[in-house]
Image (cartoon, rainbow, N blue to C red; front, side):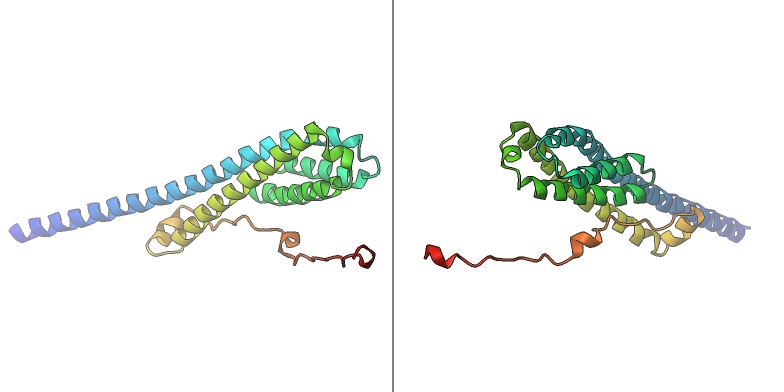
Length: 195
């Protein structure tokens, strides 16, 4: 009788140990998933702030850039795409589109001296550039969190709990194809007449 009590107690302790360990794994996966969601929410807040600044920027440059309708249209369309994006993947793609459109706008603005001297434009350009830097920092944090999450749900014993929770790997925030292209630098030869 004593042996069966010890055997029953051992089985009970083993079952409790497995249950506690499974709960710990589950809680870790929930924490990681929530870290991913929080990291994306931080990016989303900055994207919203940037979206709020875009109409002011477009209004500021409209008068000066009469012949640059395509550039302004690209910014406006990118903003609309960003505002209509629902999923993280759609928002990430729309953000890359917006970044490219803003980059194009600021590049074209270099050709307009009166715009470069406009205090409102300079303030908006500075504010949006600051937001772009903060978004880039948050993307890095997001990718770190997603990487940790993806690695964890693929590891044993987490993979067993993750499959029960129906957890799937998440996509990282990636650079656009335009950002991956080589930058072409052209240097002009100095004018021989001035030498």
